[in-house]
Amino acid sequence: MQDFIKINENDNVAVALKELPKGTAVKVTVQGEETCVTALEDIPAGHKMALCHIPAGAPVIKYGCPIGNAREDISAGSWIHVHNVKTGLGDLLEYTYQPVEPKQQTTPDVTFPGFVRPDGKVGVRNDIWVIPTVGCVNNVATAIARQANAFVKGTVEEVIAFPHPYGCSQMGDDQENTRKILADLIGHPNAGGVLVLGLGCENSNIDVLKPYLGDYDENRVKFLVCQEVEDEIAQAVELIKGLIDYAAGFERVPVSASRLVIGMKCGGSDGLSGITANPLVGRFSDLLISKGGTTILTEVPEMFGAETLLMNRCATPELFEQTVALINDFKNYFKSYNQTIYENPSPGNKKGGISTLEDKSLGCTQKSGSAPVQGVLQYGETVKTRGLNLLSAPGNDLVAATALAAAGAHIVLFTTGRGTPFASPVPTMKISTNSALAGKKSNWIDFNAGVLAEDGDFEAETQKLFDEVIAVASGKKVCSEAAGFHDMAIFKQGVTL
Image 1 (tube, one colour):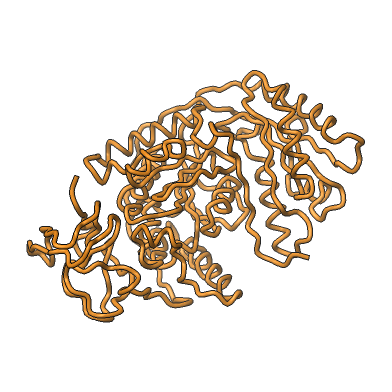
Image 2 (cartoon, rainbow, N blue to C red):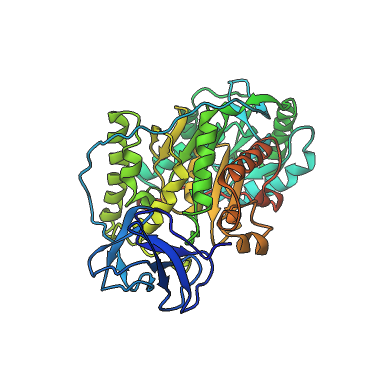
């Protein structure tokens, strides 16, 4: 295993792959010449070391792009982090479309056993979902799922409740977003059947929600208003028995991988995120797209500082303008609450070696691979175009992963350098950026990309990840599913009455 990595030939920093004690000498090419740089202080694993003198105010370069500016003169061999580098980001920016010719290829199709629904949609699970319209019936929904699981049979695997605290006392667009997300999940093909559970007096009651569903299969979707029945749990269980009978009629059949929609998200990032797991997911995205499939990239605040890389890969000028709006609308959201738009890296991110939002964003966008952007989605909007899509959602792990599921993702790939046990409404595969995390938290981590910092090969690991995604689509449970974890979170943006 090498001690450090210089990601791009134009970088003036290297990333330590393991702790570099003070006095460690590393050989590296700087401005075309091989030189030896000695660490002037201990450099923690995942953190950056200056490869040359960087004057105060000059850009610090990583991934071939500025990740901020030096706060002071930085000597070669110095540890570079929040104490001596600051963001170079400002507020709203002017953007110019400078399209690049993205790499595109076509590779042979593969199939997986999936569930084909009557409307033509494809699911990778055949569960029964209980979706409350309002937080007041959360505990009832959970109790219903717990009892109804005793009646699971055939290809139906589980009855799952998705509690949330919304559906009432919201106003305007905030309530509208809740209704859209609930409707999206009710229509998600991973659910063979759905019980929509209402209270009866909430703003987003069942009668209000039904128009958001459009045409729906009355055999697949059932409704229950708790205030209208004597024993809501007993009646709900009877309804779910019928849903189980219906869903048990579905069998897995061969389905083209071109039908897969995969969400991409990162959280608890470290200094290796943009070197191992995120670029691996980017290569996976390119591979799936080469087979006609679809990927969705979200967490807009973590695009700040790297947004032009995505904008210039937009397939059309119209998509470029939509991406500009995607970025600026989120910046204005920050500004509307008097928050700075560039104070994003979390304490865990900083501990792992990420110094600025640009540092985080350039690593984050590695997940997008190199394919052209073919679609831009608003929060609560479902995917319509195959290929790479951008989705408006915040960086919060649970909110963003739920948004990916609501947009149509069958599976979410979640890269992490710190580790997290959370789940989402769809299988959420955790990909570690480092082998230490994969070894320590094998009950959380589904795939170890940390080998890429050791002796792993990107081409081989990309194929391994692709094969693992196909296995999950075919029914293999990810760690959070095996643990019985199922989370859901809606983006809260407005006033609570």
